[in-house]
Amino acid sequence: MASSSQHAFQRVALLGKVNHEATRTTLLTLERELTNAGVEVIIEERTAKQLGEDISSPTFSLDNLGDEADLAVVVGGDGNMLGAARVLCENDVAVIGVNRGNLGFLTDLDPDHVMEQLLDVLDGNFISEQRFLLQAEVVRDGERRDVGRAINEVVLHSDKVAHMIEFEVYVDHDFVYSQRSDGLIISTPTGSTAYSLSGGGPILTPNLNAISLVSMFPHTLSSRPIVVDADCTLHLRPAPDNGTLQISCDGHRRMEVLPKDEVLIHKYPHTLRLIHPKDHSYFRVLRNKLGWGSRLF
Image (cartoon, rainbow, N blue to C red):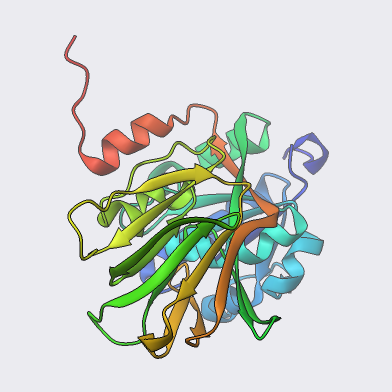
């Protein structure tokens, strides 16, 4: 049995939504095999409750994992990864994902070879990168009334389905345009392969310090996505006759936007430390997930 002092990460947290037997099996296998390899394992408490009595590792809440672990292994799809990462980034916990979802742009590890890949990571053979998040603030009468953060995207939209709204967009107080559309997607490079992609937005490689603005069904043929510096502050100002709008962060956190409110969007101070296997290639992921062509020669 290897000593944990030989590992690049000393304490590993396991978490995931145990919604089918394959995910449960992966989590139980990880706990058993990591423990046998001399790695100290802890389990997120909601995950532990779903696993029941089949585990022996100590449990902690998601909010406390950041103080207890230096690597979190998330089993599931990108949605599970997003939910965990929004919390774990507060403590700079490294995060790696096991793909038990659909596309899995953020979850690298193959569940059929997860221990082989993960032990290699624990031996120090990995790629580490920082992904920035966005913070959205709803300002009312000069005061911040609500705040949310997103790894993928912040979306301004109506609280009704398929309802056109009108708003103005400013970049660092510089007026960009007024627009009538179903809404606006403000995406990070991480989110450029998510909702923004389905809306016709550009793919931004993860190392870019940029965000994209993608209109949702704009009422003009000249509307095009815009890519701006990620260090700017975006100001969204709804027209007075819109009624109540919403800001969504990663499709999870929702905030009410009244007609005279202003929405500020900028970089969040903390970043997500994402871990990949040593042979990770972003463009290979794109080829595999999006069905792009392979080499011709």
